View 1 (cartoon, rainbow, N blue to C red):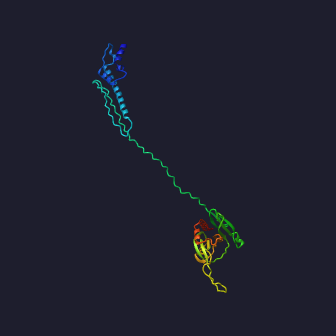
View 2: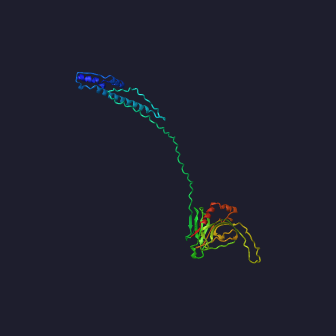
View 3: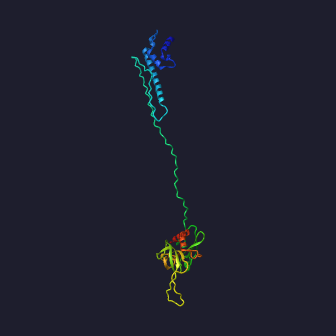
Length: 345
């Protein structure tokens, strides 16, 4: 039995192959040099020659498949080189392996053809533009902050009818005004307006009393504007005015008498008088006319309002040019605004 096993093992191509298999040599040996043997044992225990040939063909096919797989792997690995901007050229590989020729009696297993991997198409590299430095958005330009405008405080007379606006920091000092009867006393008030230094600049009166005198003047109007908040009881407009008044001689129209000087006409010698007040439009005429009055009749009596010039200065302005220059000052603007703000309700 051991001798039979030894003989069978001797014809097994796998058992007789060296550790390092040369596929070409093994294939040539199997196809061209079959071994024939005989023994005295029954043939039932021996594999036929045809079976051995078919077995050799299968083994050879397996070896070819393995070799083809290795070759294909080498080709694929060779194509995966470093990426460049242009596609790598195709590589043609010529196989040097001999193609086995099967015998006429045996149907060989077709040799598989290795399909080379397609040459990978390398996409053109994406060029990233250089980073543009981010410029911070310019902060919105804001209008220069204006100092807060002080809302003028408003003074109202005790009975609630007459009122006016005061510049910021100015104040009012009140006192009892003139009256004819006790019934008129409570409604007669004088409001003296003081600036932030405590200097009296304007006088406003409201009550049921009025008096005054008038003369002839040559009036030069320097500024005038309608006071929207006050109307005379007659319906006539009331105006703010700043004027220069030169007194005139009043012509004597009576009969002459003994010792009477010769009548004189024309301007009175002396400086003009400057008046800044509120009066009816008919009382504010340019040229030679009556000096008139600044008393305005309102429902609760009389209203008069005027600027109090420094009594130590006569005239208040040395020259007409000095008066016109004062009109460009802040104090003039404040006083004008105060008189224009008068309102009767």
